[in-house]
Image (cartoon, rainbow, N blue to C red):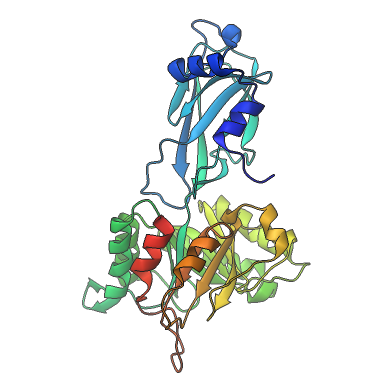
Length: 360
């Protein structure tokens, strides 16, 4: 079972009949509050967006349980006082629509986890809200110090759609470039200030590029452009046997302060790569996918993204909506039609209607 509704979580937690449910609705407390210790520590449950730093997440369903009984529940942020120091409790965080639980702030990836504390404590559930991963393979300045209109279009779009994640991938000569550049700083800072999570491009040559060289590119993105907070590992292998290579790079990126690692095999992959990075682009081509491998249904859409270019026909709205159940991020552009060698250097005519569908 991949997802549990809030109602099913409540049922599994031991919530009882109608009268008990009404009491819980009124008080936000379960039917077995005997575990309370007046004056004891409090636990606060919060939620935040991993892929959308500008979005203040509230209203995600969480519970505090003990021995299978729900002591308290509500919508984030929730604070439960008068708990007992040193006792075991269980906290849960539920998915809601396109908000998919990713992990807790301390790295624990279990949506239902056991906790034990001596003093008041806060746990933050981290969600991926989904949206678009956008290759932005163009120079950030048009003339003088002005930021490119292609870059500003993405920043403006995020202002219009603050509930989505917009993740532009910036790419200076297949990486961070030879050195820090003021034009790139201005462009990246503009995107970040608009609430975008900016990803730095690094290529891996399908696992053949040395770890040391790739790690140097990752480190330079962090050193030169602090507002780049995600890493995009291009040319990711989708053949079993190189999983450790990508897991090592993801671990290194997190050690440098990046909190989202995206891999791009650009084609269907195999289950053994799940978890080596946070999200994988499983389609990069000219057709909007209409089906996905059956095994994907066992995993959260957080793990998957698609990129479609040279789409000159109307946006297939029904397919976009349908694909939201399978992939967290979709991007489609008309750019790249023959003989264009770079499909990722201009704004997409499909961008606004695509965002409307993803936000619907």
